[in-house]
Amino acid sequence: MSLDKQITFYTSPYSPYTHRVHIALEEAKLQVAKYEIDLRPGHKPAWFTAKVNSLGLVPAFTYGGPNVPPDQPSSESAKLSESLVLLEFIADLRPNAGLLPSDPELRAKARLFITLSHETLHHAFRGFFFRGERIDSILPSLEAFQALLVPSGYAVGPWSIADIVVAPMMVRFVRLAGYEIGKYPMGEGKRLLKALAEPRFARLLQYYELLWQRPSVRATWDEPLNVKMWRIHPNVTRSSSTAGH
Amino acid sequence: MSEPKRITLYAAIDSPFPHRVRLALEEAGATYDIIWISLIYNKQEWYEQKVNVGVGKVPYLVYGGPKLNPGDAPSPDSVQVPESLVINEFLADIFPNAGLLPTDPALRAKARLFAQYMDTKFLPAFAGFIFGLGMPVEGLLATIEGVQRMLPAEGFAVGEWSIADAAAMPFFMRLDQVLELNPPTIKEGEAAQVREALDSARFVRIRKYIADNVARPSMAKTWDRDAIDAEFKKRIERLMKTGKVNSDITVPIPAPA
Image (cartoon, rainbow over all chains, first blue to last red; front, side, top):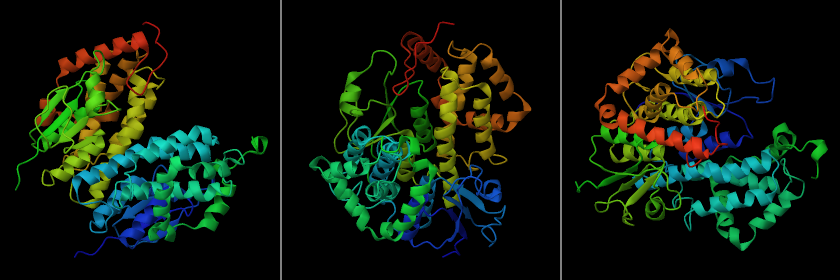
């Protein structure tokens, strides 16, 4: 077996996109060096955008090249980004870690699920937390997302990257709604949880429970930190002029 | 080894998305049937009712089952896959020795980043420009430059040809075609501006990239310029009458040129 090349993972502790990568790394038991990037406006280090990811986004990896301190990335390493691409990358590095099924049809189903989750779950997630929509406007998208799940088990039956992609949003929907954290009008968090407890969302809630029980999901979810950071992040806080509307 | 399963591809002539799949099938040396679907006029109701049920988009790949004719429903035992990038990953899985993706994990990641850039950055700029949705010339050129920056010094997106190139090339072929056709949806003079820029030193690398792809038999086999011209003109005609661009985008009816 060849020596593994170094991986440095640029992350943030409360981003749902980096959370995807943390889950996959936990599942694959892949050793990486982690470095937190402060994403607050004015705090992001210039070298990160210049040398690691020109879009300035996390998650990002450097792969290979000499061992260097994370804040002095080498030009010799490969620069990789985009959470979905990084999940496939981890699956390629650890093909026996169960991140993707070996059957081509199931792999296609997992990838299709990921594609279709954007306009359903992800759309609802952004609408509720970032655009301040009420539950009436997001519940149809959640129902459409639920319809993508096979009748039992994980998204496509066996565990896969399809579940890793959606787990961070599912967890935040259920766990942060309880604190009324997000741009949505105060009280909509409680209304959301009440709606999800209805029989029409039985499969979705069952799926959430399965994700919540997955050790890699729990091990990578820091609730106090997410609550603290999401409560103050300008993208998901209610402005004082619209509080309660 | 068991008998290879039948591959049937549902495609539309002018759409770049099924073209991505045809390129991959040709590069894999696969044998396949095509059933042509018209997206513009004479909508084939059976397609949305029996094949890509409830969605009705192309491409759609059926793997396994008997020979299909237009109007047939695929066998429930067959593997059925929509979404061009998902289909091409499926083809890379069922043809593991055809070189559709490199074996090196970092290069595979770069191939996927390239394809993702095409979908998230290039496609909106391309559609925005050619369908008159408000994309300025420099916006389009900047995204083309973004694609160019991702290319290695020579060769294809990740060196050897891969499904990353299949993701990109159908759009570059159609950009070239549309600039020449200069439909009324493009602002006066802007097609010429884009053409002049693309012919300049700024884009020498991507011109070579496009030429390298065009030289491959897979492009000669899958690019029927005249048929695609005819279909694209119908699409523009429909847009000028109804405002409909495609199944996802409808705009206010454009003012006549």
